[in-house]
Length: 329
Image (tube, rainbow, N blue to C red):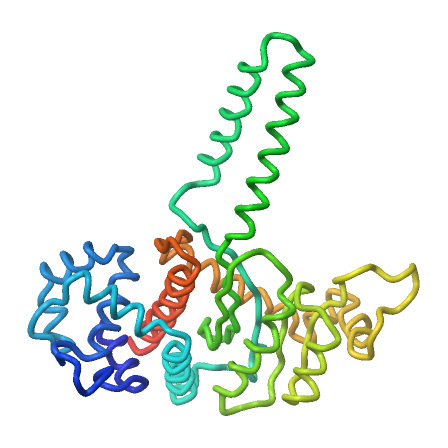
């Protein structure tokens, strides 16, 4: 909570409005939200925890404990896109101050992942599908032809449900400094799709936040496009490393289209060349995704797309605060 309070104090004003009640400052409420996410509590659970640990509140200057409704309203205000960007700006400034970016040692890596929209395991969902198929077969009668027809209808319905579920999956794209596993930029969205549209905005956010603007950026083939290479190399002056493996494959022996995609085909041809240019450090972003899901959970509590985006932003900020607290000791 102390690390989150110091971070928010450098990035946010004390109050949202001069006419507000001024019971709590914005940095204090952000520290409470980080503690809630770190301990995987709901808003009511966080209120009960803070009432039992009042010395935590005194550490950040609070004389009373905020209730769950106050925390919920604070989350809606503090986790808006512009304020999340300010907090990530503060993270980048702090990391540059203590020399924790390390972009000259390891490239910036960009990758995306999906979170669970609810607290239900994959095993539970698979057993539900199996039970649904068994009930459909039982209703169809004892005839093998009718049973096969019922199973086929069940499989089609299962595919429709899976497609509908994929359209609602929360997606998080991160730009990560691999030296200390700090998330420098993020983009939260909904639905499965290509990583190409998120590559340039996330890279630009990370690029403008760091003082050393000459580094390498590595991403997987999901971000492969000539436009992304031009945005990284010509607009920002970076070295982009993206395997040219997306889209329709070229004929055997033919080079992919585009100047930079052909260059990637030659540069990333062998495992040794990938290690030498630094592309193998791309997996540091997958490490950060794994750290967030293992430490903070892979399921989101929000019921709407906007609330799930706020949940993902809070997870990213909590992860950065945890890394900062560990480095500072």
